[in-house]
Amino acid sequence: MKTRSTDLTRLVLDVLKPHNPPLPEFATKLSSIRGVEGVNITLIEIDKDTETVKVTISGKLDFPRIRSAIEEVGGVVHSVDEVTAGSLR
Image 1 (tube, rainbow, N blue to C red):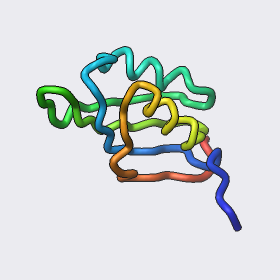
Image 2: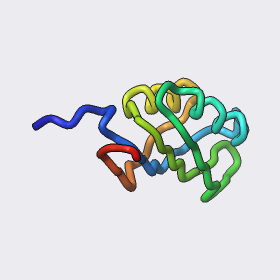
Image 3: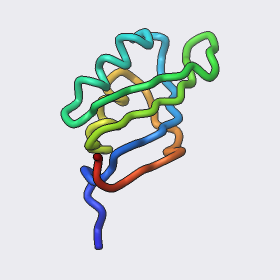
């Protein structure tokens, strides 16, 4: 059985992003994606040009759409650290 991307209910992503957009704007952008019910972003590391962040997203998720939104702002998903799939209750 093939898992549909919308079967995903929680993702924890390790993301490298530029300083802009700032974290509140980045979180708002991700939260505006259809199906996303919540976004939590934790700053892990910061250097001269980039920020490493842990992004936790919950809802009825479309991972390709989320990855595209991250890439639109110049970010890169380094890894998918946690995945939950199934029905939201």
